[in-house]
Amino acid sequence: MTKDIAHLQMFDYVLKKYGNKELFANTRMVVEIDGKLWTGDFLILDDCHILEIDWADNGYTQVELTRESINDAFDEAIKVSNVNVSQNRIDAKIASLQHPETLYQEINRFIGTIDNTKTALKPILYNAYCLDTRVKLPFLDISKKDILLVSLTV
Image (tube, one colour):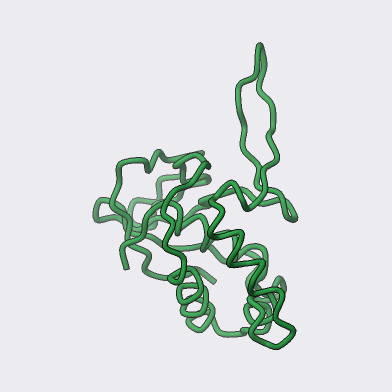
C-alpha cells in the first residue's frame, strides 16, 4: 500500500508509542523505495516526544516535538480514540495485539481514517537499512519518493 510521508510517520508513532514493548521492542516498518526493501525510523520517539536535530545560531540542538507536529488530524484522532473507555481505545487495542500481521493491519486501519497528508516533520528515514544490499545509512532523504509499506520486522 503506497503511503505518503505523513501516514508513514503516523504509523511509526503508533507502532513505537503503543505497541507491546515486550513483543515488539525492536520492530520496524519495512518499505519499498525504488524497488529496494528498507527498514528504519520515520521519526525518533523518546517517550512521548518526537526528536529532531536542528541548526540554531552556531550549533546543533535537539528539538522536542509533539504528535501535533505530524498534523492536527492525527493528534485529534488519537484524542478522540483515547476518550473511549472500551477496548476501542487505540492505545489499549494496539498494546494488546500479539501477532505482527494483526498489529500491521490495525495500525493501517487506524491511520487510514486520517485524510490529512501534511506533516511538519522532516521527510527523512533515520537509521536506514537496505535489506537487499545491506547498506546502512544514518538517514535517507525520502522527500520525493514513492513509498510502499510492505511489512514489519520482528
